[in-house]
Length: 132
Length: 420
Image 1 (cartoon, chains in turn purple, red):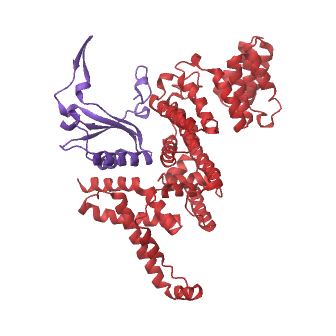
Image 2 (tube, rainbow over the protein chains, first blue to last red):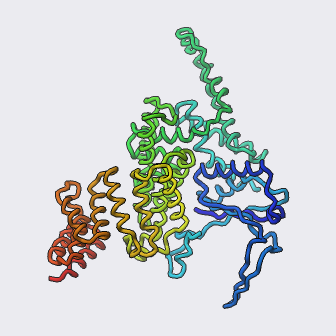
Image 3 (spheres, each protein chain N blue to C red):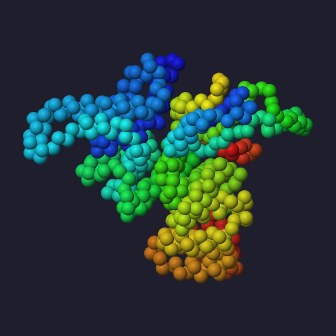
């Protein structure tokens, strides 16, 4: 199964403070372990919300809001996609993710809707599958 | 955490570490069976200790230390028991070799290539291809013998027996659990790649509605390919194979129609191809080419798959490039099937006469006798050339050679479309 792993934003990441060198090194070691285990499929860090845009969708209307945004808990500082056997394995890997932030933060794991989760692929739903 | 959650967390951690653990232990004791037992012992110790202490910061190192300490205890006990023998042996050859000490000395000596060594050992050419695949899935993939049996449409005793025999063969041959060097390395790597691709193809051959273990073989093979790519970042064919598997896997869910029948590449709904896997496949292919491996057999097959992956619509397919890739593939992987596909590509790229010229040269190939795709392809070329009567004869011949009812219907319909 594939999971999307979100590293949630904290005050450090929002202010664009780069993590200290040793934190970077720890993160590199973790990433390398994920690669060597065949788990890491894709991933990237994201810039602070100051460079982000939010598009509000309401009926036919679209309203664009420029960052930065206030609701820190809803923001994402980075993501990666893992291929694991089950959620327990994803959890075991997530526990190993080093903490590179000085303040409390969070990591979330969301399983993909995979083709086998659908009884039969239907029109309109098809192109959503597995597209990242 | 509840006791149940802790238990599951420990088991998941163990699963992550298991292959590496077995690899390190196997290199020490030169015995996969004992290595598996020692790893299992380490899990038992962890299940007893971790609920109290919590999961350690570096669980892999913890498990390894526990397993090796247990190994030392066992060896010491064995040594005590056979002290007399040992003393006699020592007197005979004057050796002071203490296996327990050797293990102690190697405790902190993690070279990181143990896993690779185990993979090369499990894929050793002295084993049959089936035995290599089963052993690799067991010790590296961590699948149970029951899962492997279901995946290969076999039964558990057969697979268990196959694995036991493979381990014995390796033990008897005294294989060193190391990554081979020099000239041997290329041949042995080819064997590893062959096993991984065999596992992938077993999964790919599974059709919808079958036991889910079978399609998951594709994922297992991709995982093995990704592990290998992480450990051998300079080997072009490793990336060639990885690219081939990622791109083929991108079509897994588009291969079947609503009635479960297999669809050809041109019939598939390309919006259902997995973009993420295509992207990974193209990246791996670029890496293989950058490493100078563009003409490797896996890289060429991946490049062929990439031609289809890059075409958003079937009619956008770059057939001229496909034809030239088949020209090159034919040199490094000569096979009548490659030649037939090459003829199809030349027909699509340069017209039916070009295809006919190539396919006629294959008419006498023994391997293609009674091979329905040959007359089917020839019929298609003749049809495109407007030689309808001859095309009809070929389609009818192809239909007679086909057992799949849906394909028969397709070929009969094509024959009828040629007129009387």
